[in-house]
Image 1 (cartoon, rainbow, N blue to C red):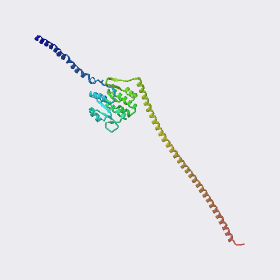
Image 2 (image 1 turned 180 degrees about the vertical axis):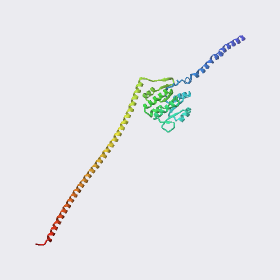
Image 3 (image 1 turned 120 degrees about the horizontal axis):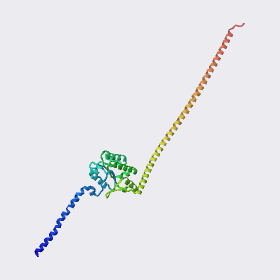
Length: 319
């Protein structure tokens, strides 16, 4: 009985040990297969985020631009040359995110080589265009769209986004625009969403094209256009008022000058009349003097003749 019991225990152990030895052989390839399949999937598979597509400008709605910078660094790690437009001081931004020599435009009114004024939208667009055209740039990130909106008219910022979107599409680049959506009214947010591709971590692209949003967009655009047109007309009116006031002042000055000239003309006329009167009086005086001289000459001659006759008569002897 003792040998049988030992045999049974040995057989039981053998039967129990055999599956355990086979299980590693069956399960070992599985981890190997998983490890071999992960790299081709790429980074999106690890992070769970969809990849960025070229010729697309994405709108990333977030309270802090964390996701936007994560997307930017992932694209940069794949060899894409990028630039950043930020409210953060460039030196601090490079140090905290290890951005190297990535060109950064600092949105500020302070004086700096890398600074650009938040209201200088033309220069901002020109810099981005040159980066995409001349610098072989393929990636643009703007992390402070709400700051740009607060310093400009909304319709001007919307046109800037449209131009950036078109430039990115033509150059087959990628645009990333981070926005704190809570700072915008729903109607304006819908306008921005309508111009860009809304990026979500669990979906490739989310587009909201409801008719109500479109009507709000159109209404807001019309209001902005009317506001701009009203400001333009008000400026023209003020300009015309200024010109009218200037012309009125010049007309008043001309009238005063004309009055002075007329006064001087009257004085000259009076002077000429007095001169003519004086000349006439002098002429009459000269005539009178000449007449008196003739009369005196005639009287003197007559008186001389009488004296001569008297003298002759006195000299004759009496008969």
